[in-house]
Length: 321
Image 1 (cartoon, rainbow, N blue to C red):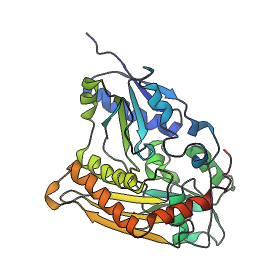
Image 2 (tube, one colour; image 1 turned 60 degrees about the horizontal axis):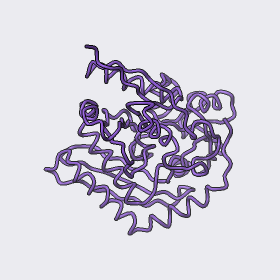
Image 3 (cartoon, rainbow, N blue to C red; image 1 turned 45 degrees about the vertical axis):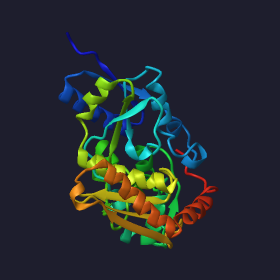
Image 4 (tube, helix red, strand yellow; image 1 turned 30 degrees about the vertical axis):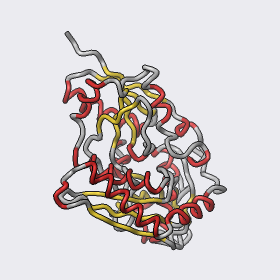
């Protein structure tokens, strides 16, 4: 008897459908189950407003999560950095597949790197974290809030409306546009968002057999790393739109560095830590690591800095799609 087809829910954007297609292929290869992709439109896909004005944390996730208990889909795939840090009733995080490139990338006209851009050049990004770090590297540039899918953003560079944009390297890889990258920022230049480059695969919590089946997709080391990063974000009491960077990697021990940025990039609070050397990919230690690094940032004044940064961004108009 043939196994029933799994319905895999995804945002409708080209990038989201591409990453979900990869997950679907892995599910079929590992389990033999056929998979059909189901596109779901989220508020973040249709509104040109800044994310903090339309719900911020979880704006790309809610509609997909609603489709699970509504029995519209069996599995949902998210960019893990978009996932709220708190649990969702009736939904289980079933898998974190091997993480792709977590770094940020510059796409500029004429192959330019950040150092090549003229003073006053406009850099498009919808991320306060990216904007702050661009300004920290080049305080003479101008960061412009921008929304829209990756193709729309790249088009604004090609048309001359912007001099450059900063996007996730993994996302450009997924849509076959790695050729557009003119510079990749290493984590010591630009800290990624917590969970960047990783995917989250969710299913209904009562589907235990399916959750176990999907769990075979998980990379334990990457799960530990993103668990530490998201633990930090939760302990800071903020979400994916905050000016927070964090990156964890390694085993025996797992190490993490994190930072909270002021809007203009001039003020930054940094902290780092490591799990015990013999803990390998232990999730309990990863959670503790995130909380300990967050506590260090909070003692240094991270909460006040995040509030000041948020208030400085709330009235900035975004470039339309």
